[in-house]
Amino acid sequence: MKKIVNVFLLMSVFIVVSSLPTIAPNAWSKTISLTYSIFFPPTHGQCQAGVSWAQEVEKRTNGKIKIIVFPGSTLTQANQCFDGVEKGISDIGMSCFAYTRGRFPLMEAIDLPLGYPNGQVATHVANEFYEIFQPKELDDVKVLYIHAHGPGLLHTKTPVKTLENLKGMKIRSTGLSAKVAQALGGIPVAMPQGATYEALQKGVVEGTFTPIETLKGWRQAEVIQHTTDCFDIGYTTAMFVVMNKKKWNELPKDIQNIIEQINAEWINVHGNTWDQVDIEGRNYTLSRGNDIIQLSEKENKRWITAVDPIIDDYKKSVAVKGIDGDEAVLKIRELIQKYSQIYKK
Image (cartoon, rainbow, N blue to C red; front, side, top):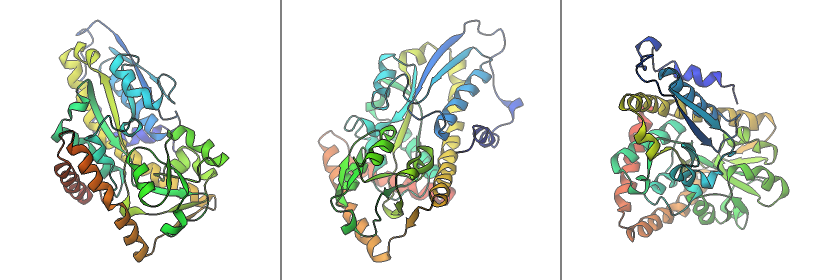
């Protein structure tokens, strides 16, 4: 994990400071303090990206907005973060849709194992998908932006080269990745990312489905020895950055406009950060002597076939809720193709 300065380097590609809109010194005398709950630990690149967003908001509003960041689930737990924002426990929150399965049925389509190549693609797909469909399940908060990690891969304590190796293995997985683990023959065990290290260390689980960045960002390379690079069934996990709707509506329009502009820029910041930390995670696990297993062409096709029913099951499950799963999946596939041309692996 690189220092927070890396995030600021990423920011420099977007803007020339002198051209940015800011609040005139005397335009608004009231200072508002906002709390921001982030489930990532403070050393994680995505937490640092969130911190830099908060600092940029303070900067461009000339200090009229002050944001106090609570990293590492110190204000609200990962699975309580969305409720915490909605109820006003925190003003802003960052966590995963997948930590409350069934609550965000349309957004869950993003997490399907559709073969995301990297974090930039996943992040841009998630944001455009939200803009197109405007899910009612998010109407009670102000969505600032969404980001999503690179392909979720399998990391285990013993090598997995075939589906037979995985059969009956207890695998930490959340949201739809739990269905991926089950479809491949594993036994899914749900838990937040922060609990995974200890669970692997103590043998509560034997592996985890997660992006490779966690091997460094969450130190999991210390407690696994093998990664199966099942890229073609790579899923993502969409993560929200949302704000209490009442707090948002109380902000003056010019302040809202500034924050919206920053939000648009930070989509790229988070996407770049996901790709950078994936590279670091891969390098870190190899540096520890862990291996990365490439599936044979024949075995790769078996894994793709194994997870295909998950997509069909998703479509059926959301149909009873009045959601057109076919339309959602088709649009995601189109968006993956679109952004894969822009952000090549």
